[in-house]
Length: 406
Image (cartoon, rainbow, N blue to C red):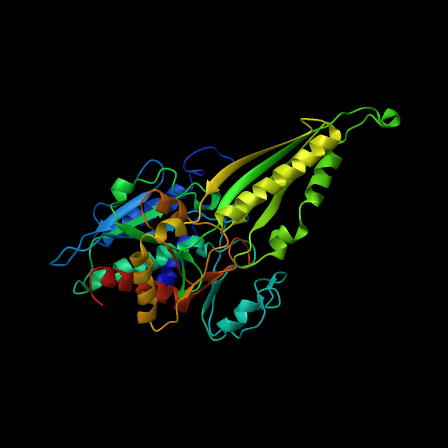
């Protein structure tokens, strides 16, 4: 089975995570793909392959070296984003893509004007959706390239490698992928999440992340008698949102510029609430954003009375560069392996987070690598199948370099 065939098979299994379930995994249907993967891993000779009760799949391919070498991990997540449906995925292949708009169905079109990076994919083979679901290349392409590398090692035992540690995780899309990760069972000295886009891109830096909830208390009275008495919590919430700098919102930032993002708002005269996420690659700058929001709260309390606006913050994850800077050899292996494939590597900071960020802070250094996917979390998602094959080769080359084969 080719990497493309594997990916299509995995994409057809609905594994959408559920942020509101309160269970682990967040959706029991994630077990369906886990069971398929355990069976395939055992067929590939990884006899210890198993899925635990939290839906984490672990497996190991033992070293065929005559010397000691570090154990290298490769990780991908099984769940798909809750942003868009993953039920009834019907992938199709476009050969020799012409670089133009793609009619996914009679009504839905992937327009290059909205996704200009797709012009660079002219001549490539794309896997796309039928316009009714997401594809699930995020991150089933990561699974497929790891499985393809394992198949190549099974077919060609002369290919040298140290101990290979594999993990397929649930619930990455809702930020809970590492929550029950068993580091001892994984047994890797360092690892790579195969959860990016182009294969020449390596990422060893993520945002620092925090959330903020602002609650507003009002005073409700009949609007006919409201003059100088009513305090409208809903209107105060709107004024709070407007008081934050517009240039700090996601739609006005790029690269290493951080942002304050209003995710949700609800309320009435009596009570209102705003939910934000704060992101920045610089830890000091994310603290500056917290201080700014607190200052705006203080201004409203000074105007309307103490307790009118209350804000609470929760840190979510930190920039994994803090850890990976102490283990430069992990990123260096990936960088040189990308060069070995004839590609020009780029180190691109992630405008988001990965499981690798949390895993790194738990003692498992873990940069992120690409697998050929793009336009994630929606109906316009795709995977470049030539890149998928390259990602499988990258997994093999990393293992060779880690084993001391330059």
